[in-house]
Image (cartoon, rainbow, N blue to C red; front, top):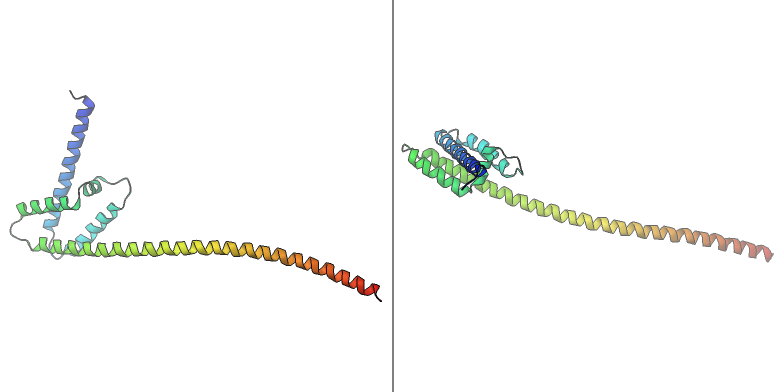
Length: 172
């Protein structure tokens, strides 16, 4: 027998799923209703919102949660099925959307590769900087040792000059 808390949890889960389905359906309708001319600007705005939500660590808004909860293929499959059921024979905008999505995905993949390359370069340069700092520290210690030795040699030199001066005075 379920407790009252378990019923409330089940009910909350069902409400969350209904909310996610409504958001998905709303997004599908928006995608279908946008014309081929405005496809570019809409996708750029929408994809930037989706990309930025992927990199948020916590505190996602409910619609961002819905986007992240399901894999891309799940969302695409659902979107395609509902689009087929709701389409009135005009597949031109959806083809344009799909091509634009593929283009943006290729761009995103290139950007990610570039990001990985830049991160690797940064890491390599940070390693070089670390090694150079170690080398500078060693050189500074060597310099300190040399300065100490130089000071000691100056003192010895002064002492030797005094002795030589005294010896030359005595020999006169």
